[in-house]
Length: 170
Image 1 (tube, rainbow, N blue to C red):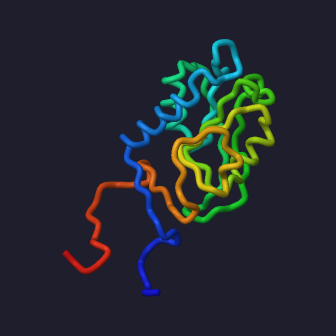
Image 2 (cartoon, rainbow, N blue to C red):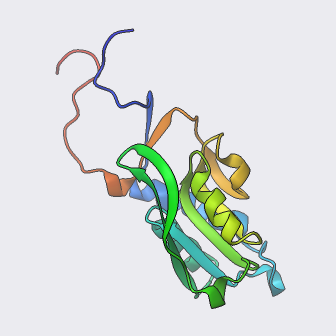
C-alpha cells in the first residue's frame, strides 16, 4: 500500500453548516411527538458538549423545548479517543433519572461517551445526528450511519482553503 498523508481514518465525511442544519431538523422530525410527556413532549434537552450543542439548539427550537442544559464529557484529545469523563453535569433537579430528557450529541463513535451518560440518566432518550456501528447500541434515534473507519469533519473544525488533488498537481 503506498504511503499517503491521509489521516488514520481512510474515509473523510465533510459536513457543512447547511447539511448539519438539515440533518438536525431531520432528527427533530423523528423525535417529534415521541417524548414520554403529555402530547409526546420532552421535558428538557441536554446537549453533550461540545459537538452536541449546535444540533441540540436546532432540535430544541424545532420541538419547542425551552429548557436546555449541557453535560460536558471529554473523550477525545485531538483525533485520539481517551476514556470518557464528565467535566460538568446538568442541573440534577431537571434531569433526575432522565425521564422526559432528550440527550443530544453530534455523533456516536465507540459509544463510550453515551454509555457514561446513560449510566447517569438511564431513562433518558439518546439521539445523535450521525452514528457509527460500534456506538449504535447506545443510541435510541439517529439520522445517518457512517462506517467505523470514517472521520467526520464537522463545520466547526474546518476552514475554507485550497486542497491539493489526491493524484498529481493542478
